[in-house]
Length: 253
Image (cartoon, rainbow, N blue to C red; front, side, top):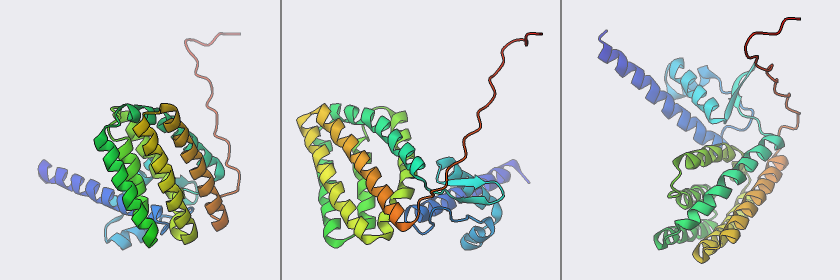
């Protein structure tokens, strides 16, 4: 087989794996695949009408994103959620967005403010119609727009990566409508306060609202998941500590 044909096949497998991974990622974020759900290659291959090769690669992509895990003797599954895991995610979010909001404030042009205001208007429409899924996309769009021009691409990549893992936990609002409607209302209020701080160029207020937003979101998410029984209460095993690396020759006794 000519090298060009081989390369085409490799790219086709890679693209198929990415499509499958994206589809599974959406199913996880919309609670169609709950925490702890086994991701069985044969079933997924049958669902997408493909071989197991791109499915295997897709699962590796999900593991790399942090929303799936490979558990010994149990296989790949949607990452189980625990309070410790949520605490870690939201603590990282505070660190990353604490820096990003200050950068965003320095670049808060009238055009950015208008785009944020329009997204808030669309969120209000979702609240009136009870469109929780539509609001979830607008919530993402608000923060992506807010941090879109901070000038530090690596920081933005880290923020987006952390959000993808948080979306798995946020899916509780899609399953329980009462949580979804409360989430929309509080989200709109938070976004209005962030926008007001940007307009005043009040760095302290912008940072304070951002931290409050993250902490309140963590509490709401944890409470919702606990009510649904989706939080894994079993303690996680301690990570093995690698032995210290030795440098040079070992001293002889």
